[in-house]
Each structure stands twice: as C-alpha cells, then as structure tokens.
Image (cartoon, rainbow, N blue to C red):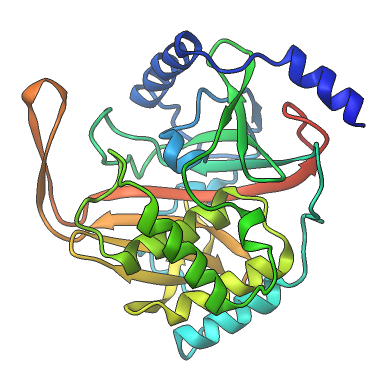
Length: 322
C-alpha cells in the first residue's frame, strides 16, 4: 500500500503558482456563470474547479432532487425539536459517536467529500446566489495536512492545508469538549486572520467557525466529532435554531452564533442529528475594500455561505470516489 501511494504521489503534480492561478481563473469563470439546478432530478458528473475559497473549502457528482432549490423559511417544519442548545449538542454527539465513515488514524488514505454550495454571485464580492448551486469534490488526507482537487485543467493537484488545527491534533488524548475548546482556542490565538476572515470577529466566533470548518472538511474520528458537538454549547453566545435548511433543501436544527457582522449556522439532521451543512449571512451593513481601490457595501441579510455535505467516504487515493 505505501509503495503504491508513493508512486501515486510521484505521478501527482504538486501545485505550482502557475497551476494555482490557472485553476483560480477557471473557478472564477465557473462561479460567475454557475449552472442553475434543474427542476427535476438530473444526475450529472464532472470534476470541480479549484475549490471555492481554498480557506473555506480546504473545503462533481450529484443526483439532484427536485427540492434542492428550497428557499430558507419556506414553511416546511422540522420533524423534531430540541429544548436547548445543550440538548442539541448531546443528540448530535450521540449520533457522531457512530462513525459512518470508518475513519481511523492511517497513513496513505484520504477522505472523499462531495459538497453542494451556493456559488458567489460575483468574485470578489462575498454574496452567494441562493437560487443556484455548484457541486465540489475534494479529497483530504487522513492526517488533515493535505487537500487534493482539480487544478481546472483536469489534473489533480495536492496542496498543504494550514495554518490551523487538524483532526489529528484533536485526536490526541484526552478527547473531551474542554480539550476541544482549549486546543482550537490556542490555534485561533496563533493563527493570523486571513483576507477572507472578519477582522472584528471575537475569539468565540472564530472558535465556532473553526469547528464548522473542521466538521465540513476534516477527517475526524468518531470521538472527536462527538466532543466537538458537545463543545459547541459551551461557547458563549451559541444558541439553537429549530428549523434550518442546508443548501440541498434538507431541514434540520442548527447551532447558531451571531457576531457583530455575521450570523453562522452549523446544521444537523432533524431525524438522526448527523452533520448536514452550514449557512452564514450578514447581520449588519458593512463596507469593505475591493482590489483596485473600489469599495462594496454588504447589507444586513446578505447570504455569505450556504453548503450541504452530500457524501463523505474513505478512499485509497485522490481521484477515487464511491
């Protein structure tokens, strides 16, 4: 297995500046002209462009259901409700303790993740288009340090993930909610704010967003996933939303954090409390700078992110799917 993996890495090009720029160009073209989702089921398969916002995707095959274009607040109730964010954390943790991905610490294997996201309306503006979807395929090394994706020209490239904390870092004993918060908090304290981050975000907000990213993209063993869900209610300001909807139109409950400029949701199933996806929107008007000296004002209520995790499976190498 290791010899085969070594030969694969030799044959898979490391991402270069030229390749990354080419991939970015192709991705921006795809984002500016996203493919509308059809009104009836229509399976499609194709490879994605370089994942939208590498810092968020690090983190295209999908059978699309007719309900995928459901809008938020369409009146369809969740099938269950929870009394508190603490109860939601406990139920999500119990569900996460049953590891559906069979993730174990191993060398050479990868987690294949298929996501449906609402694409950006216009790069580099942050607003996403609620009415359209693109689907991404990414592969994440089991140690959490590498991500593989299409370079925009049909070739897989591997890039290093970071800075930040990985699932492997969180899997060191003891694995408890308190340790999850302590380790993620320490990482947040030493990780510079990127160009995609809100510079005014509080420490609690950054911890919440880090957990959201970990659940979306990182290979996590079952006890780490469970501990993260139990950690969420301990973050000051986290509340519960009874009926949340992911980018695939699936209803569930959500852990919610509202900061000075944004509100963010981590959505779990209303039936079995497994992780479904994320949502984020602005809660206050904010003006920011664009390249070339221009400015853009984002109004309150502008959607900033909408995702749905459709598939996650451990595979032998990048490029493998189901």
